[in-house]
Image (cartoon, rainbow, N blue to C red; front, top):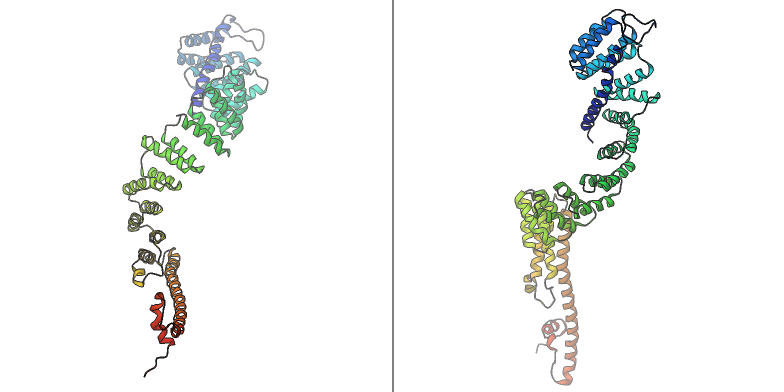
Length: 498
C-alpha cells in the first residue's frame, strides 16, 4: 500500500470522525440557551451564559446552523471580546470557534481554538478528554501525523475509551508518519478485530511486515491472501520473491514455474524470469525452448539481446545446430564482432571448418581477438586430420607429401603461425606447431626404422643365397630382397678383376 493512498484514507477518516464530534459541539449552545438568565448564578464558576453573551452566541449558532461559518466566527470573536466572561462561556465559544474553523477546512486555527477551550478551565474532565481526542484527530487530518498519533496514544494510555475508530486512526497516522514499528501493534489489533476482514486489512499488514523485515509474519499474511484471492498474480509474485530472498530459491522457482504453466505469466519481464530460472538451475535446453517459443509467439521481443541469450542457451545445451541460424541472424542484425566469433565457435563444434573460418575472419575484421580466432581456426583444420587416412611406410615420399592428411597438417600449422606473438594464445600455438611437426617426424622415423629392419633381414637372406649358390648351381635371392642386392654387393662382396 502506497503512502499516498494511506494519507488519503487517513484524511477521509479524519473528516468522518471529526464531523460527528463537531456536530455535537455546535449544538452545545442550543442546549444551554434554555438555562440562560439575566444574572449570573451564585456559583462563582457557573456553567451558563449571561444574557448578553448568550444573545451573541445564539446568533453565532444560528449562522452555524445555516452553514455560514465565516459569519459565525465574526460573532464568536465579538463574544470573546466581552469583559468578564466566565470559564464556561470561554470554553463553549472556543469549541464553537474550532468547529467553525474545521468546517472551513482551516485546521490550524481549529486546533488553536480547541486548545484554548481545554486551557479555559470551563470544561468537565470528560469534556476535556473528548476535546483532546478532537485535537489529536485534527492534527492527523492536518498532516501532523506523529504529533496527532502521540496525543491520541497519550489519551488512550491514560485510561481513555479505546474505540475501534481510534485504533484505525492510530494505525494509519503512524503509517503516514512512516513510523512502522509504532504502527504495528495498533495495526495488529485493528486486523484482529476486523470482521469481516477486507483486502485493505491484509494489504496493510503485508505492507508493515515487509517494511519491518518480519518475513515470517509477512509470509503467513501472503499465504492467507493467496487462499482468498488466488487469481491475484501480484500475491504469487510477492510469495516467490519472499522465498527467493529467504534463501529458498528452489521453492521460488517452483512457484514461478507453476504460474507459467498455469498461464498466469504474460509480461515479457515475467517470462524472461522463467527463462532465467531454468538457466540458473542448469536446464539450458528447457530455458531455450521457452525463450524460443515465447519469441515466436511475440510475447518476448526478437531483439539482438534475446537472440544472443537464445543462442547461448542452445550452445550451453550443446545444441549447436539450433544455435547456428540464430547466431547468424543476431550477427547480421547487430554486426557485433563477438557474435561472429560465437557463430564461428558453434560452426567449429559442428565440424564445419570452412564456414567457421569465414565467421572467425569476419570477427577479426570487426575487432575480435585474433589470437582466439586463429587458434580455433587452426584447431578445426587440425581436427580434420583425425578423419583422414593415415600415412603408411609403403608410400613413397611424394605420395606422403601429397596425402590429404599432410596437407591438413600444413594448413593447421599455417593457421597457428597467424596467431599474433602478443596474443595470450601465442605460447600454445607454438607448442601446437611443434606437436604437428613431431607427428610427421615420428612417421618418418618409424618408416626409416622399418626399412632398416627390412634391409638387414634381406642382407642375411642374400648372404645365405650366396652361400647356397655352390650347392644349387645358381644364385636364388628372394624377390622382396632384390632391391637390396646391389647395396649388399657393394658393401660385402669382393669383386675379382681378371
